[in-house]
Length: 452
Image 1 (cartoon, rainbow, N blue to C red):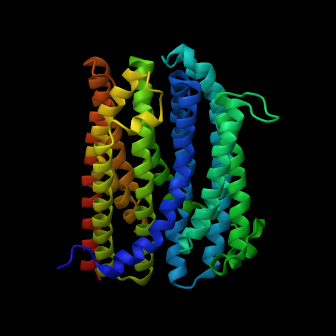
Image 2 (image 1 turned 45 degrees about the vertical axis):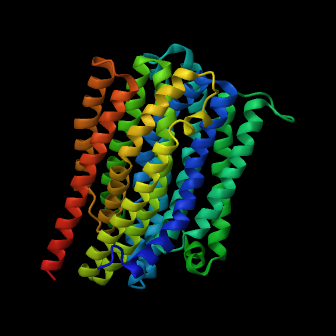
Image 3 (image 1 turned 90 degrees about the vertical axis):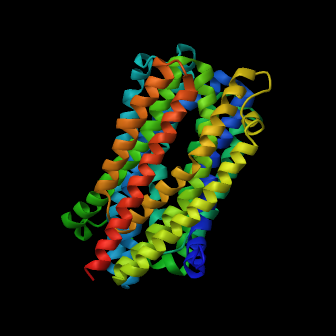
């Protein structure tokens, strides 16, 4: 018996690869921000960006989670040829996503003074506030992009999103360097320039994806039929999407805030620990975001089988996609171990010996939990395809906030292990999450097959 099913694997890769390229583009924004900031402005500026991103993404994922209610509903409706429902999901999703984006933007802008009471190094806070002020505004255009993206991916058209993201990423990299250094007619903006480049790139993504979708046969109809007329909205659809989106938002919030909390805990120890933590986290986030491709593919594929009520194939697809994620992250972990002394050098100058040495040690731990990270994010996509979101959010809360954060604080601060101790806790939390989520999928799929 072959380890992978050829047909399922081909379909998964067809859906996943464009998403992976998209994720490369999106995570590369953060990756290149850190590389450019770390090399041009030094470790203190890198720590400022790390702290700003920790706060921003803690809020941003709440909005992102609501958008994840769109693909399973679109995928299920598409398998039935139900165009009316797809149009309804599109319009309702747009209103929910943009509204949540505006609310969280205001929360970020009004809550920034609290950073000065967070116990972080005072020397990095002014740059953090400057960076975060601009990043907060970018959440609104990004949520418009997410609405277009999730509808497109739910319909199985992923390459348009990839094009938009890659081109926007090139724009971001160029503007990052221009704004930070102050080239041509632009003044030298430092850390603030990095955030401004990200904002402009995100506005571009919305415009570009709109024109791509209006030309693509799979999505053209839904762009043309899109409307915000009051008469098309229903309380029932809003409630359905919020019931799906809110637990997903909380699940993502628990996970990302755990990593954000890890950044704060490392900041309590020293600027060196927070900078080293950010280097390792950036690398681990890169591979994690690639694996989101398998998660999205799982949501779409399982959503289709749910619409067809074919639960035997649904279970087989889920197990096959877990195997794909396992093999992919095994490879990524090996790259981390082999490159542990080289990869951190992309983010800091050679003279920052202490930062680079600690980051190298963290890369080893990151390599070990790559498998757990890939399996848990793929399992979450599978459960999302089953429209099962409440229990997974509880599982992530237990794994990250009842296990990871308390243990991380104990090892990092109390036991004085620094960022190294924090990362031991992160690895354990991810492993607990992976085991519980896979068990949940296997139990649910088996129950559906039994009740057929």
